[in-house]
Amino acid sequence: PVWLGGSDRVIGMEVIPLEELGRPRIDVTLRITGLLRDTFPNLIERIEDAVNLVAALDEPHEMNWVKKHIDLELEEL
Image (tube, rainbow, N blue to C red; front, top):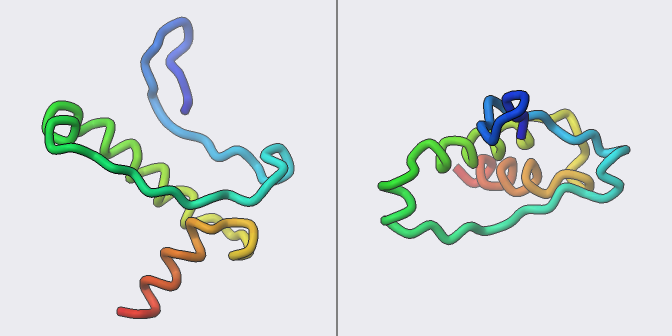
């Protein structure tokens, strides 16, 4: 996340370069309850933004599992 200076407010996102990360980007599954979804829709949007940001990176599938699995899903459509 990108934080608003001196606060606890997130104002954006930035990708950690693979060189700094030091490992492949992994894919995870989130379990989101209706209460969380309905109470904090902005958090769900942030998660979606993060997934889309990482999936759009020009990285090989073996280093970006998020991109790999989204690309495979799109191929099946």
